[in-house]
Amino acid sequence: MDQFEQANNEEMFLRGFYPWTGSLSLGEFATMVASTHYAWAIKVLTQYLKTTRAEKPLAKTK
Image (cartoon, rainbow, N blue to C red; front, side, top):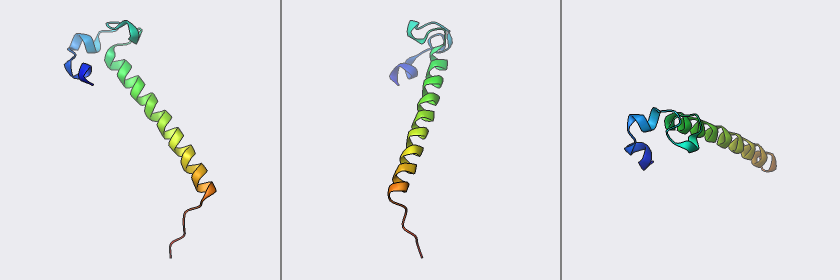
């Protein structure tokens, strides 16, 4: 996070500035990675909830 906070506009938005981002800018790369991570996490959590509810249904309230 420190790198993002200290980066200037050229470092953040110039495509290919960092070789490890490929043809993306650092900002584009961060957005892509974050959104992919959140999509993966939602999928994992949804599967976990389905599994645990199937094993032990929620108690009914009166």
